[in-house]
Image (tube, rainbow, N blue to C red; front, side):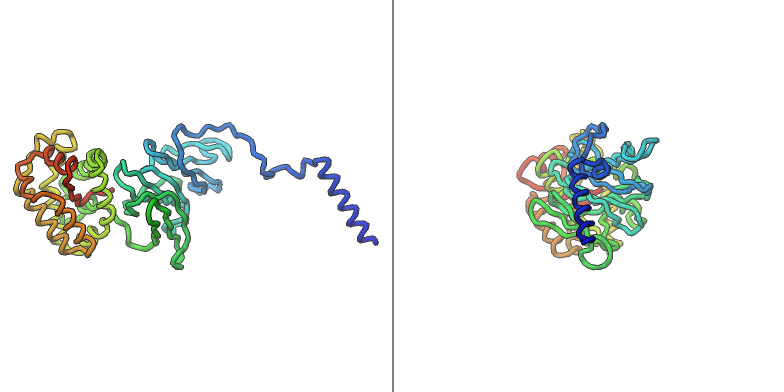
Length: 343
C-alpha cells in the first residue's frame, strides 16, 4: 500500500507539473528555436556541413554554393565572437556548381576534410572535389579526378572494410562508388610534367596559365568544348598512368607542350588569327596520339581512335590559323581531342 501511495503521489505531482508548465521542464534543448539575428554571407548556398574544422572544439560551417561564387568556410566563435556566432575565414574554395558537401577525415591526419559533390556542364568539369584541411580550418582542393557525371548527393562510410571512408555518389545518370585508396590521386598532367626533369619543361613559363585559360575560358563557350573537358576527366587516370610508366612518352609530351604553347597563348588572349599551325606541330601531335594510344589501356585506345575519326585528316590543319581551327573544331560537326589539361 505504501508503494502504491508513493506511485500515486508521483503521478499526481507529474500531472501538476504538466498543468503548471514548470520552466525547468523546457529550459534548454527543448527543440524550440529562435532567430539568432545573424546574416551569414550574401551568396546562394546549395548545401552546408557542420564540423570542427579549426580544432577549437565547436562546429564550423563549410558552405557549398551555386555557380558564380566560391565555396566558403565560416568559423564559429572566432575573431572575438562568442560561440554560435560565425565569421568568414576568407577562403575562396573551388566551386563547380557544388550540390552537396560532407565533412570527414579523408586522409587519416585527425582533422575534418571535405568531399564536395559538383556538376555543371557550363564550366570546366563535372569532377567532384576533395578539399584537404591543413588542421586549422584552411586547406586546398586536390587535383583528383572524381567522375564526369553530375553528382547531386553524397554519403561517406567505410565501404570496403579497410578502415577509411569511401564515397557513394548519387548522380544524374548511373551512381558511382569511390574507394579511398593510396596513390590514386589524378593530378593535372601539365602541372606534373612541369616538375618532371624528363619532360624538359622547367623553364617554360606560363604553361599552366595558358592551359587553364584554354580549359576555363575557351572550352566552356560551346557544348563541344564542354564535352572535351568531360572526355578528359573520364580518361585522365589512364593518360597519367601511361606517362608515368614511360619516360620517353613523358619527354615526347613535354616537347608537344612546348611546340603548341605559343599558339595556345595567342588563342586564349583573343589573337588566334595571328597564330598559324605548322606541319611540325601537326606531326608531333599525330605522333604523340599514336604513341599514347599504344601505351594506354583499351578504353584510352578506343577513345583516341573514336575522337580522331570525328576529325578531318590532321594534315588539313597545317597552315590554318588557331582561330580557324577553333571554329572548325568547336563550331562545326567536327570534334577535337584534348590531351592534357586538368587542375
